[in-house]
Each structure stands twice: as C-alpha cells, then as structure tokens.
Length: 451
Image (cartoon, rainbow, N blue to C red; front, side, top):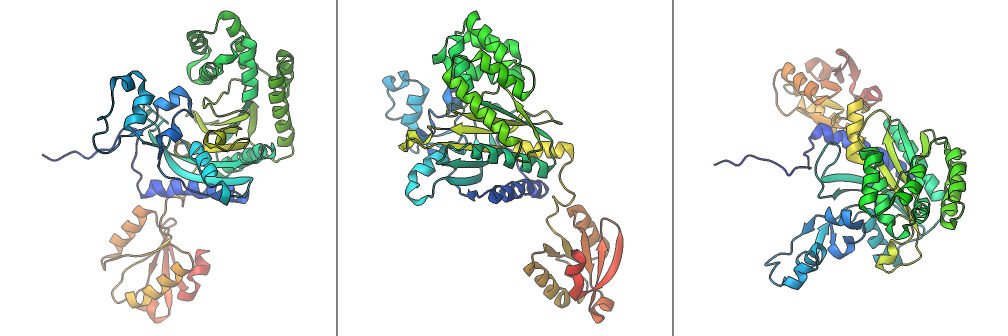
C-alpha cells in the first residue's frame, strides 16, 4: 500500500518561487543589519535541554520540542521522578531540545566564546526555530527568525539603532507598520502598585494578550492568577491609558510617582522618544502600556511591530535583557535585541503584493538551444555568469515555442536567440518576454543591454 506523502502540521514546503521571495526578505534584512555593524553567526538547531528550560516561563517550557534520548530512554525513570513533574521527566529522558528562539542560544554562545569576542558584541542570525504550538493562521511550529542583538553595553543608543533598523527594514520591504514600545520596569511598578509584586509574570502574561482576547478576558485571567479587585482597579487604568506618547508618560509619572523603578522606566522611555525625534525614523512609534512581551528575560525597553494594513499579530519584537548571560556564568552583561518574523513578514508582503516583479525570478536570461548554436552561446553564457548574471541554456533542441513557454512559466525576462544569421554577424536576438518585443544586439554588448 502506497503511503500518502505529508508533512507535520505547522510546517511548510517552499518551492522555487517562494524561496526566491523569502531570500529577498533575508537579503534585505541582512544587508541592513550589516550597515549598522552587526556580524553574522549561526548556532545548532538543537541545544542541551538544560540550556533552554526555565528561560521562557512555564508557557514557553511547555512549547519546547524535546528530543528523546536514543535507546531505552525511560529505563531509569522511577515514580519519584514522575512525581517531580514534566520538567523533571524531560531532563531524565531528554538531553536535548530544538531551540525555541535565537536569543537564549545567543546568550549561551556569548558566554561559551567570551574569550574570543570583542565587546560590545553585535551579531545577527537568520535561522529556523521550533515551538510545539497549535498551528493556526500566522502561527507555525517551524519558522524563521532574523535576530539582531548587541550585548556588553547598557547604552540606550542600541535601542535607537534597533528602532532605526526596524524602520529601515520595513520601509525597504514596503510595509507600513506601527512600532509599539514599553518598558518592563514600568510593568514591575504596575505589579507593585497592584499590591502583587511577586506575581509580575502572571500579570504580564495576562495583559500581553489584551489585543488578542480583549480587556474582559485579561481581567478574568488576572482574577485566575489571584489578583483581587483592588489590584485590577490599579492595573486596568494604566494599560488602557489613551493619548499621545508624551501625554501618556506625563500621566504615568503621576500614577507611579512613588515607584523609583517605574520612574526609571519612564525616564528611559522619555530618552528614547527624544532620540527618535532626531533619528530620521519615519514609521509610527506608539507608547503602548499594555505591551508586556511574555518572555521572562526582558528587564528594560521592549518593542513590538505590527503591520497597519494586514491583521496577523506582531511581525517583529524584542527588548533589553540585563541578566540572561548570568544564567550561564557571565554576570552584569546587559544586552538588547530585536527579532524579525520572516514567515509572517512573507505572508504580509504576499497578501499586500509588496514583492517586486523580479523577486521570484531565479534566471535573468535564457539562451534558446538552436541547431549548431551551443559552441557560440556557451562562451557568452559563461562570461555573463562570471560577471554575476543568472543564466540558463535550454537543455534540448526543440521548437522555439516550447522554449518560450518554459521561460514564460519560470518568469525569465529575456530569451537570447542565436540562429545562423545572428552567429554570422556576432549578434544575439533578445526577446523581452514581459513586453513581447525583440531586438538584436552585438554579443559583446549584452551586459550593457541588461543593465
């Protein structure tokens, strides 16, 4: 019985056209990252499970893909281990897991290679990550992140650079976005004001869902987390605060006047807004006091980017983390980073028709295979390839109509034809498949024509 081919839910195949478009995104982002002095690294798809567990909160731990040890993995699992919960069992039968994001592996990399690095260390990384989530629109189990981080400095200039990178990236990709900003110190102050400073994680996890579930559901989840009506009445007015960016901060100063931590967060936000004004950023910046970024390792500024013209959730996000490398033995090393969700960005660009016409074309020019023409066209095609042009030669001698159909289906702009007449005069007939026009050029002038 034949097995029907399939792939796991939440994963996707990408054909040549899709890969060309995805590479357009990767190339655009990589070029911008390098302009700001970030260098590329890569880390393994799998990490030691002990590296990953406990870094993302309980919800993140549940979404980790764990790799079962080879052999009889459950041989030494006893009742005491089972009673210790899923994490205890996981650490017993699984030594490795697929990475959940690129930030924790990056922190591990920095500590492991700190003797080789120059600090502040600025890196970017474009690789897949995996999450055992429920697949739905815009949410996948395997997806690519494009991360850019600076570590080894607490200068707020790095936050501004990341916002500039986001602004330039989405402007280059043709996406109108709103960049939401907040600060975890403000969220800590809100937890203090509510009377539940020890429940910061539960509070931030709840309010981070306000756009997806609505305020009523957030309030219900806060109650489930043990926050009473007095605490809720302190939280809700802040996370629903309206007005301009400066107006929100001015109001917040009054509301959090008794919190040194909260005032520090407001001061950081104030400085960011001041520097944004002279940075040339064109995309909309919004102070969003409901933004929480559920990951536990954020300690300062946090960002989230959402497309204005397409509903899909955040397409980019990140923030400041002061203690992440400390888990691996390198204390007092602050970092800040931002992650671009390539798969969601692709979906937005595809839906809005933002890919340029040539983004999906793998080949720039194809030489038709005419009788007796190979010895004439092979040297020309080789010269074009050496100079950076993507060139094909049709593999078979057949009717031109069939060769034109092939070029048209692949989105190849030009077909080069060398018949007896062209070869005698050292020329090539170039057919523009998009316009339907055709003209002769000298073989030595093809590159000038293409440019």
